[in-house]
Image: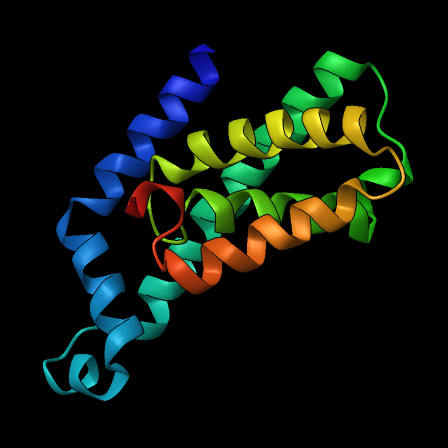
Length: 141
């Protein structure tokens, strides 16, 4: 929990800093950021390095908790689940990373109890409804 709190604080600090504003500006209009003299490539490289450090911390915590890391963590299923969780919580929302996984896991367990064969269908319908009617994820309601 301490590592989660430290990473959340770091990401929140970066988002609300001038560096975060420069990243948003380079995402929205790359040419304009070049025109005002901002080093877009190096800022994106720094953001990439920061994301790699956070992924490394996540991998270290996974190894510490499970005592083993197999090749299954590199599979599509785990990556797809993580993507669905983030879309449910809200893409681009910091708190969506906490809400999305909770909703996904509760809904998955409920659907797996009701219809064990078709719980993926229920998650897919939920995902389609969220994407169509709540552009900002569950936090948009």
